[in-house]
Amino acid sequence: MRSSFAREEMQALINDVLQVYPEKARADRAKHVKPNDPTGGCKECAVKSNVKSRPGVMTVRGCAYAGSKGVVWGPVKDMVHVSHGPVGCGQYSWASRRNYALGTLGVDKFMEMQFTSDFQERDIVFGGDKKLGKLCDEVRELFPLAHGISIQSECPIGLIGDDIEAVAKKKAAELGVTVVPVRCEGFRGVSQSLGHHIANDAIRDWVLGKGEPATEPGPYDVAIIGDYNIGGDAWASRKIFEDMGLSVVAQWSGDGTLAELATTHRAKLNLIHCYRSMNYICRSMEEQYGTPWVEYNFFGPTKIVESMRKIAGFFDDVVKARAEAAIARYDAVFRAVNDKYRPRLEGKTFMLLVGGLRPRHTVGAYEDLGMEVIGTGYEFGHNDDYQRTYPELSEAILVYDDPTEYELEEFARRLRPDLMGAGIKEKYVYHKLGLPFRQMHSWDYSGPYHGVEGFAVFARDMDMAVNAPVWNLFQAPWKVEPGEKLAAAAKG
Image (tube, rainbow, N blue to C red):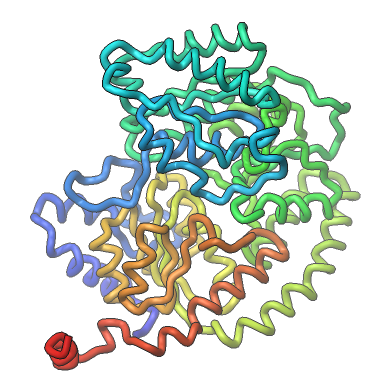
């Protein structure tokens, strides 16, 4: 199957896939799936985004609670994060993203543990404020080294009107710890994206600027923003910054602490990795404290080098010289990885559907290995995410926003990529299709994928997926003749 299409051909393919929908649904979904325009100047080619998923279709999106508790707050290691509501949401989000952190579980690190107020019918009727207050008391008694508590509200809390702000203020005064109410009920907004925004605002209003660094701020202090240390990503990125002579004073929020959140306003530069989940707090710090921020991408050699030079440009010649020296040292590592894996991956095609950053950030790493993107899109991207994506892709590449499970599967059948990268919900569908797959939300139990050593892990994992001998044991449906399918079914 060829990997390049003219715009008219790709549009015809899109129209054919969407033909199965009723007229109104078809017209709506057509706005969300387009052939790419690298210039970003064609209004008709822009992908519509950040709107509610169509009722009745299978979407892979999460909710506002998932965006707050599961992404932003959950990795803050020295706080207890309470899922305030019925047990199900907390159980589902329990230790699901592989956010690595240093510390002793249950002593000074709590992120892998589940805390819930376990709402029952009685609490729905009479309210859960008293129960929440008692829970905070128990947390303080059982975990005296926890530096704070966040209250992650689930849907029923917003519906019945529990005053979690009043409880938070009262308990903070009584217990002498920070207690942060987060109004992240799952029904808010159209996806987990609003949960990110709500979580950022809660940090801004209840934590940021409430503390001072233990040591005098230095001229090279930076903060890593929007890196959740999945598989050790933030640690890999931190090594690069330190090789450049920069001092990382905070990590938001993988392996991060409450004190780091409270003192980040003293950093000289905010380095944002996941733009979608943390641009809000960067803008707030720029407006309130004058802290500049810059987006970076540490997936693959090309983007690593590009980002290092962009970041070094904010500092003096000392940092610039150290950045260039580090780049020179990294070159041998990058070449060794390419020499080993590029011959095995050259010309292979891939499709992506991930959250709010990887559909564009990881493309360069694949391309460094000689692979070619033929389709990509976001679960919960906004217009500015797509504006940043269009220039990274070639003409007429398939771009889709919040595709249904049907659409994604059907596009894969038509385009026949050599590799699919998406989430855990999609993984086993593509295995059954005989299509190599990598789970790109949490690196399929691997990682890191960021940074210098991360590129070696990334390359190994993509090779392991694409070239695994297991794929020789069965065929993808499009490689089997219809008569063979009938014969196999008759034998079964």
